Image (cartoon, rainbow, N blue to C red; front, side, top):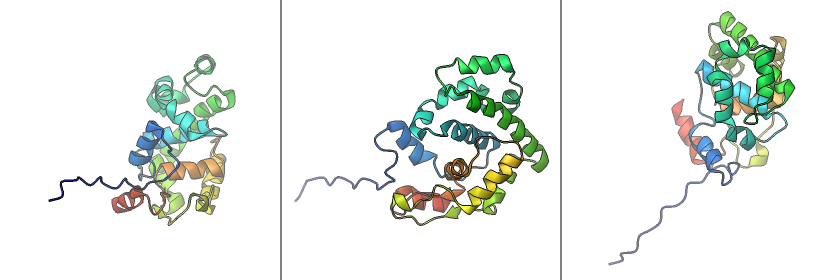
Length: 199
C-alpha cells in the first residue's frame, strides 16, 4: 500500500501581491470584497489618495501609521484639523508626508461629510456609479485589466465637482477595485469565484 502523502496543489492567485506577506493577506481577505461600511470606504478613499504616484505596497505598509495619525479614519475629526495638526502630520515619518496629500485628507473629509448628509450615507452615493451592483470582469491576464473605465471617469468628475481632490479616474478605479465595486481578480485566481459567490 502506497503511504506517500500527496501535497495539495497551491491555490492559483493574482500575481501582483508577490511575496510580501501583508500584500498577500490584503489580496486574500480584503481586495475586491464588496464594501458597504462608510468609515471603511472613507479609509480606502484616503489611502488611495495617498497612493497617487506611489505603489500600493508602500501605502499598505504604512496603513496602521495612517490609522493612528488620522484618528482611526474618523472623517468628523479629520474635517476639523487645523494648521497646527496639519503641520504635525507633515512631521510624522510614519505616513506619506506630502503637503498636497495631507491637505487633501482634510478637504476630502469635509466633502465626504457633505455627501453623507445629502445621500444619507457615502455607501449609497458611491455605489450609484456601478448601479449598486458589482461589475464582474473576466480577465485572464494582468495586462487586460484597465487603469480606468467610463464608470471611474464619471465617478472622478462627480467627486471633483463635490470638492474632493486626488480623485483622478485612475485613483477612482483603484478605489473601485479595492472596495469590490468591480471584481478584478483574474479568472484563475481562487478569490474570483469566492467573491462572486458573495453577491
